[in-house]
Image 1 (cartoon, rainbow, N blue to C red):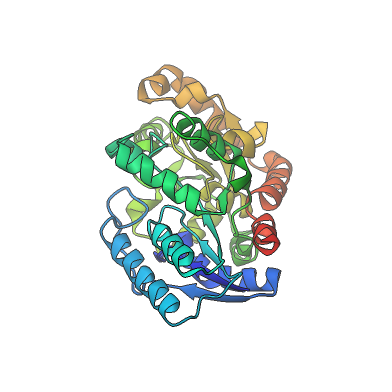
Image 2: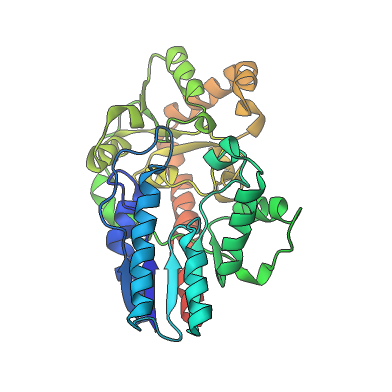
Length: 352
């Protein structure tokens, strides 16, 4: 079996750059199979404002991947039992891959990692396109093309199935809750652990409506004794960002969209305390010590109503930073094992 990784474009400041480097090695080591990457070439580094990707560039990238896949079929390089792993399941080329495989009689398996889609009302697709038939039919068609639909959290699975089952029948045997293949982070962030901490609080998320940066800005005005930094506004390199994480005492979230959450895990790896709402994927991932009631930040008006409680919680975390490190170690262990390890993903692929 050859495992073909149909990758997501590598933006230098995102984890996708690290996946480009680490995932092929990790997958080959875990499965002992031949692993090849199907790339779309150069990547636009300027993402659409507030988004994870460049909405135009991502389609150029995927089109080049499709061209490569088509040539592979034409040249007879796709064999029975090959496995195609899409690191972003929202990739319409999977429909054309399925088309070629079935019409040419090549027995392949396909897996895809789901990050978001129109079924999430806080995602760009959900906000701007919503439940238009074309996008819902497209997402369900992609889901059906995959033999293995991989999700990183039960929250994400429930959201996907709750929305889609209104109009479609769901084959739950095609769904797998696995950790994302990010075990490399533990080692790659080692050099930032043990840095001298200062009274620094980070907002490490995209500046987008669903991340509620206005709450963070207001907190900065109310708590002048601490330094507040919105990371995306600093134009940081990956190294500079990790240095800030290493110096920070607290990572704050009021997110309305999160199907996993990588930045708070990165912070935890370097001893920064996470403060996250008891909702979304955080609900199943975070220990009680690091969750605050969801209603405190359900929207800006709710935040204004509960502002004193939010402020008191931040002060408690900052002033008791050292005492919380024992609980943070337990949090890291949980995240390492259940959410940021590719073990279950590799096993599912190997079992095919």
